[in-house]
Each structure stands twice: as C-alpha cells, then as structure tokens.
Amino acid sequence: MTIQDLLGTFDVQKQGNAMHALMTRLYPICRSITGDGIRETLAELRNQIPFAVEEVPSGTQVFDWTVPKEWNIRDAYIRNAQGEKVVDFKKHTLHVLNYSAPVRAKMSLAELQPHLYSLPEQPEVIPYRTSYYTERWGFCLPHRLREQLPEGEYEVVVDSTLEEGALTYGELFLRGEEEDEVLISTHACHPSLCNDNLSGLVLSTMLAKFLSGVRRRYSYRFLFIPGAIGSITWLARNEATAFRVKHGLVVACVGDSGPMTYKKSRRGNAEIDRAVLHVLEASGTPYRVKDFSPYGYDERQYSSPGFNLAVGSLTRTPHGEFPEYHTSADNLEFVRPEFLGDSLLRYLEVVRLLEGNRKYVNTNPKGEPQLGKRGLYSSLGGNVHAKQLEMAFLWILNLSDGNHSLLDIAERSGVSFSECESAAALLAQHGLLVPSRRAI
Ligand code: ZN
Image (cartoon, rainbow, N blue to C red; front, side, top):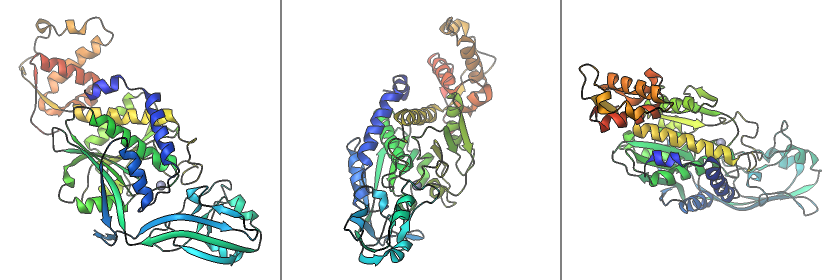
C-alpha cells in the first residue's frame, strides 16, 4: 500500500472519531514529566501500535540538565472544618499542583492561601500549574470557589512521592528504504488537558499506525516524551545519530477549531518548511505561518545551535493563544473529532510530499521530447486537468536537470505537487525521466 492509496480513502470524520475516543481514554490519567501517569499513557498508546518504552534513571546528567526525581500521586484534597472535601484531586487531576511535594497538615485559611492557585479573570476554571524544579506543594481551583472558602481550620493532604526513579518516554522507529529520518515529536506530560496535549499524542499515534502499513522511503521516528526535559534527554542519548533527522515536526494543539498554523524551523527555508507551506496552500483553507522563535514546545531543543535540526511545529491555534489553554476548559468538548481528523489529513499530506519529493533527470534534454508519439497527449484525454497536466509535463522536462526537485518545480510553475508527482510518474514510465542520485 502506498501513502497515495491511503489518502485516497481517508475519512476525516471516521479518523477524528477514533482519535477522540482514544483521547477520552487518556483524559482521566494524571500525567507529569515522570511517573506512572506517563507509563499508563504509553501503555494505552501501545495498544494501538507497539513501541519501545525507555526508562532513564533520576540523577542522569543530560547536557546542562539532570533527570529529576520521579513523581507519583495517589490522592490529594482540602477538607473543611465540617469534614467536606472542598478540593478533591480524584474529581480532577488539575486540582493538584503538578509535581506537588507531599503534605499532611492542618492550617488556617490564611496559611493555606499562598498554596492556592486560581485565575481571577477566568473564575470558573481550574488552572494548570506545575512546579518541577522547585519543591513545593499546592492546589489549583476555580477562583469563584476560592473566594467562597470561609475562615476556619482546613486539613490538607497531598499523598504523593518524589523519589529516585526514572524519566519514561516512548520511541517508535519505522525503518524505511533510506537511513534519513522524519521525526514526529509530541510531549506526553500534561494531565487532563486535551488540545495541549492529548491531541498531539493521539495524532502522532494514528499517524504512526498509518505509516507502519505503507511503503516508506524515509525512516520515521516518533517520540512521546515529557516536554523540554524529554527532548533534551533524547538528544543527549542520541547525539551521535540525531543528524539523521532530515525533517521534523512537533505536534500539539491539533484539535481546536482554529486554522492550521505552521511555525517554521530555525532554518526557515528547510524542505519541511516548504513542504508544509505547500500543503497548507493547496488545502484551500485559511492558515497561518509564524517564524521560528526559541520559545514554545520541543522544537526549541531540536533547533538548539548544537543540533539545528530542521524541525518545525504544525498546530491549529498555538499554545497560549486560546483562552482554554492550560485550564480545565481545554477538555473533551473543546477538542472536536472533525478538527483532529482534518489535522491528521494535513500531516499525511506533508508526509506524502516529503516521500515523493525527488529530483529527476530528463533523458532527452536536447529539444523537447515528442510527447504525441509516446501517447502522452492521449493520456491527457479530455479531462479537465488536461491543460494543467500538459504544463506539468513541460515544466518537469524543462527543470529536470538533476538540480530541481519536484517541489522546486511545483513552486516555480504553480502546478500542484500532486499533479507534478503524477506527471513525473507518467514521464518516468515512458523512459523520459530517471531519478537523480543527487540529494534534494
Ligand atoms: Zn502546555
């Protein structure tokens, strides 16, 4: 099966529904940058497609960072003087400050206040807060609830552990005909939050599942890692071979209703940048493009100057630009199946373009070859794309001197990549083109 066959039968709504169903199973798990939450998440994803799970011991030095202690949590709550749980981790994973140190204490409201996090400007939602590298305890709650807490004695319990353990990540490698790799990376460390980041996890998983079943030119590497420390850890452990990554995308925020947004790689004009822009333009729907900045998700680690890998990030509405971001409102209703399915389709189209983007050499470069006597004009038939296909033939024959890729030709001619790809295949069938050995 080829990726073209796959795209021919792709059903956006059906795939989106499957992605949303998987997301629904992952939603209740309390993930963090280490611990059983991420293990349980990877186990669920491995039901879809098997991959390796790596464990890196706490204390391991990874470039300028150290793998932290492992965090696990069983329960957390605040009980009022009447014995009622007014904040309960078992009702929502966001209620506890992620990576909260353990605590068991009784205290006044005034003593409790510095440990509470809420959003006065969004009083109905629970904010998402973390404290990975400073040891403290805390709770997150709707501001409206916080304002209603009466004076009195409160019992606070965070039944968590911060101990020597490991950092866990998932890595799936799909070997292709070439050693060159396409990297698909997504963070896996957020608790019950859907667009950021469960959407990235389910899209990557489904993309991997599809690609495992098609013929591949490139090798594909999928990483399911805790944000920042995970990509730094992976780079530190794979420093000698990371250069094989020729194209990469960081996946996140792919389930909201906003237009697709592409953040370019640090290089700015890498093949991945051009491939994504071509796909978004050809989609006929609105999209946004942002230049690289050393902020955001793991692209900033892959793009650090010691690696400078060509890794961009393809999202819908970027992090921080939707009000639901990092709050309990980023939930299963906010992310919709049709947008998940549409995003997966764009990723597949980008992969299809990368796979098909080759350089060819015209075997008859002296004057135009006579297309008519080879039946190539008749292959145009009366179809509505006949003129476009003829133009594609002429452009490809003219520019196929071994120096221009199909994407170069598509960009210069204004003929779509898919049209160029079909035209090149016909020309190759008739012996007028042969693949060039030159790198793209
Ligand atoms: Zn986030």
